[in-house]
Image (tube, rainbow, N blue to C red; front, side):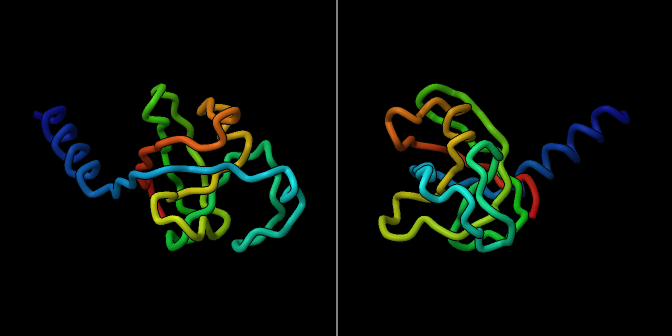
Length: 115
């Protein structure tokens, strides 16, 4: 009975997670060392992201839908601005783990873990 209850609670919690779908860019190396909107300086090897409206500190599990690779990032900046199909800017380190550095962009699915 306890396991069934735990699984039901876990399923209910997952149902409340916000899912984002769209495309992601990654930050150019020209931004290394620049101050991010949420504080701190951009470091290309950190697992960080920019989103237009999610609160600073929000953690996201991002999946490259083409190859299934996943990474967890923290929102530390604002963007991307312009094309509404682009939902995230990711650090180069995150883009490497998702394997889309060469392509420059990727179709992604991001789940809000907490904010």
